[in-house]
Length: 594
Image (cartoon, rainbow, N blue to C red; front, side):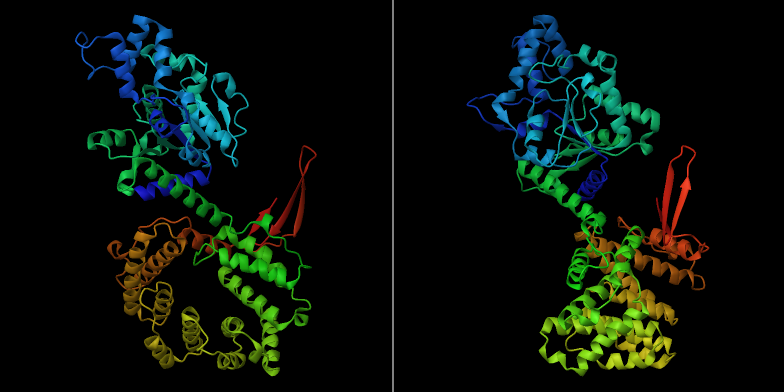
């Protein structure tokens, strides 16, 4: 579960909805830069210092049950506020230490804001060394004005060298909501809107307890944003239950990395976060208009390079997310323009056709008839000229893949004469495993569409898939279901579902495996619901792994689009508004761009 929590924090970071709270415990990760025996004290050690200041060894009530805030209050009353602040400075040797690499890793993450109850300046100094992000530092309420144009470091309890008061005594905490109302509102707003990640923070700060109590009182625990406490060591069960009651989830780094040191655990945590954020961003930005320089005049080698980059960087969904479909349409419209393609040398033609059919496979779109004919003519002419003999193995393989996709196109176009000719040109000795499976699927579809029942059943029975494969069994099962062999289909799907889930245990969040699981579960349920007596609740399956892309949601959008009434829309539309401005709308497929 701990790794799932890290995934959830990473997703919030990617969506710019994660806030960090840094407590005194994290200051122990700073690097010493001066010759000193001073160290950063935690709350218990600071309480000891306060106690020893006002009580002798035998004259006091005992340390164990004394409140840190009460002891600080007694120090102020007994020896004065200046002495109290001097003790704080001794407990927090700010300038004797510098931010370590851990600080840089932490501040390099895309936090929306960073809150801290620490007095030291380690966070600010670390932020100065982070080149890819800029932080505004807020040390007083006045600094809040116009501060949200960048992520902020908000010093909630005062800051060295001189911003006072340092919030430490019972009276400081009692009057805080009144004297620092703007700070309180800022924190509460952040708690309302963002996932909270706490590090080096005990979650026992009275102000913090009041803030989350206010959230729960007004929204209820079930409607509140998630809060995560990052712990470098195991936490007692009693405290864990108390935190759970406060809606705080403990992320136990010792459980994840038991053999690592404390600093190594934190480093591993930040590295894991970074990897997951980058992976999420890569998926979300798989198709970025700004990075694609494509025009009708772009030459074929450049187009091939663009398609190759898209194909190689595809996240792995077995169905293209709906939000990507119009983006892909944008590029395919330009790629379908094949003027003077016949003038390009054959090697470039093969590379272009190969990347093109692979991109269309990702997009889930058929090859247009005119493109099919152009590609077919290129390959037929190459055979007539016997160019095959001069090709290297890589180009020979690509040529075979192109044949496979043309084979499917001829079947979709019901051009059985060319289908049979194309089928004879396929050399199975050159094909890899997936290409051979593709050919087996094509043969099954051929027999299905030609109503050759015996041949189809024979092909299905002889169709062998590799142990550990989770995609092609899904395709095979879907064909079994189409011909009424529902028990065989159900058996294949259940076996494959078990295998997928075993793989997902090791690769939680893998988009390819998650989308396979969703597809298998949906197909099982469709089969069972279509079978007599198969619509009972206990006979349905459910996905147990979450994914960024939902098959059900994508299918609903697709069906809605197919069932929508087609309206005669102009390509461009201008609407004049009452304020004398104008709105320009371009209609593209099912989406409008304004």
